[in-house]
Image 1 (cartoon, rainbow, N blue to C red):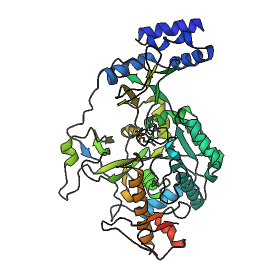
Image 2 (cartoon, rainbow, N blue to C red; image 1 turned 90 degrees about the horizontal axis):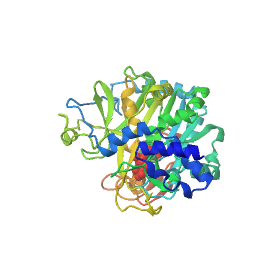
Image 3 (spheres, rainbow, N blue to C red; image 1 turned 135 degrees about the vertical axis):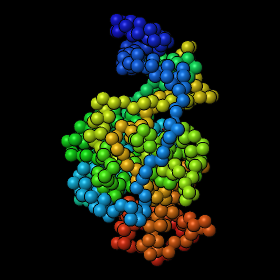
Length: 471
Ligand code: UTP
């Protein structure tokens, strides 16, 4: 141990991180071993370069002057492409067992402030079903519709992995077979003091670590053996979605058909978008950079471009990213064998142990977290398509406890979508003056995955204002 300790002390002093072993002599052998393991796992040369680039300097992102919007397949094809034939092609791929579901659930969910993994949050309008159950029911129902097993991969983080596993155990995996659920924790990055570039300690014997971003999904898929498991099952395409959107349509035949069959798709990585609500909506937009599809973050899009409009009045950069993708298994193999995604810096409040060994809860942001973003993989695809879905159809994220993208806005959107579906099946639904659903309506994925499934359901004739309806 003492030789290992000495070697690490030397390495750390060369990199200005000697403070990380300041409490080593207070730790028992096991705790010290664990700390040394954490430190040994770090490539300090590579980390120095990251600290220089993202902590000591905040290299601004430059957006090319000739930025163009990315083309997309519109929600209403209106003669532009043959949606029925792509949907049929997608359905074939699903029936052949080539599609897996993949939830990224390793985030810290700080904005929501929920005490537990975000997937355990009660999300639905009438029954308060947790997000994980909503997805499980969709996966079960799609499996039944297509007569196939749809395996479900879930990325957790070291911090929420045990709680997530317990939740699934306590809920009997929501009726799904345990064999078809593959859970794995994502990688981490050390949190770095913004003022000094020194790594922070969360305790005298532990580094402060943060999950390495949803982009860490690519390397975690490989490192965990999930990618190999997909290969063994004959999975070719991964339906990627975030844990906080109860309206996501996980198994979407049209999107899958376009991903595998559109003339301008390489089948490597495709994305869904919704038309931006306005120039100021804080979502990334799909653009073309050097002939490749890319997402430009809202904070990087110059205001003049964000506000630019086409002659028909539509925003020029209209395609808002909603973090729903199809990703080819071969593409993940390629991305993780010789390529890495860039990092992004986020300035956050991170509790740390000071030089006296005492825990400090900072009042202001003190640390840089380094994260990778999944959409940075898109430009690596030789060609990558974007498909427009309806906002009410598929995007009701729960990010905040109140206000924008909160449980309240999500509930309203969930009821709005249910109202649209029911009206398309001939039910009269009360609406508010501004056209929103005036009742709380929840349609279980086990009842309908799409409006067409409602034709066989037992439906009310009308739903009055203020009613609570569960179907
Ligand atoms: P968000 O960007 O909303 O971050 O993640 P978050 O950590 O959940 O929430 P805040 O910002 O702390 O409030 C979008 C999606 O990406 C996943 C999240 O679980 C969510 O599904 N994610 C994010 C990861 O899986 N790992 C990460 O490191 C970050």
